[in-house]
Image (cartoon, rainbow, N blue to C red):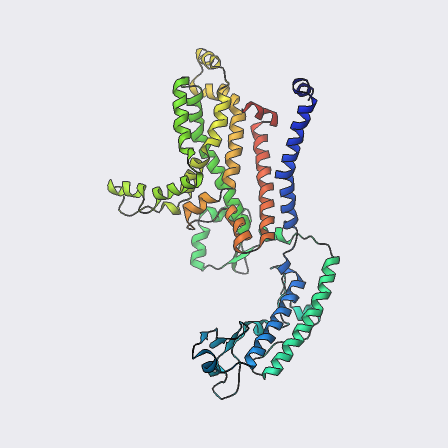
Length: 467
């Protein structure tokens, strides 16, 4: 700190550290705190008060539909013979915009008036299952809160149906107000969203399929670590943890593949090539990345498609008779991820290798050291900070990759954890569970990065050598 103050002055150092603090607060701390708050908050639609409010809305909508139904004019006079199909018969639109049954569907075979199926009336019952953990026994609204067992029957006269629906609406309204007050005074946070990650789901499989799956290496591994097990003769899997484990394994393998490919490239450019040729090598490496990443990923689909460049070439050479299903191979995703993020691996390694005095390599060779020993004793120890930075950057990018596995596999492979989080936020409208998944994933990745730095014996100040 004293060196910084002497070199740049107190004012400039204060501005620098203030900018770093604001950057860390706005881009790291506050987003994670917001995500954590959402992760420990129960979804509103799962609260007991929300169940009661939904019951009230269904009962009120049922009453409105029944009122419209009771006063509906004949279809032929109101619509000119036109009708709109419903779930159980023909309905016509009313002036209020609600669907009204046609006059031709107003009687049963015996001539007794009977209304057709109305969804809200069917849901207007106090015997509703509450949202609880899957491991617990079912809990019902009427039994939990002492409500009378009420439901709207379609076989009784319309006025009686409306009276029952109104009774249900009144009971639901009173319960909603009481539950809302109780929930406002209760502790607002819960860990149920995190439990969803560890929850076991029953997997319906036949005995023959079970034997085939249990023989695979992946299923044996999942059983060994408790992610797949049998209970009461049924197969259960912790799908969330399986997806997390599989994604992290794929990210580690992609990082290892990138390191194996990029280390020789960095060595070639930094230490084994004259400076004038190194410039052309770098241009050849960087120019493809002038194209937008998404366009480069889509370009790979034309290469690996069933009628793509690679299959067409192999069929033209007579190597295959049927197209190879590259979209179903996890290795294809690894290759595209390495291609997409290769610069994040090769540049840190190159930058550190470029600072190595070549005289050390020549001296080691003069003393009889072979190529392997030169790399093991001189080049790799010197390039270790660059290797660490490249591996961390590539791993974090691969672990969070979304577009590459989604576009390349086109849904034909098991999804990555980033896709699961996306589906929780935007496909299933379950953002609280998605936030729990996201926060847990961030912590797990940070722990893995910390373990990697400890194994590599690297410290944060060593990264200063990666310019």
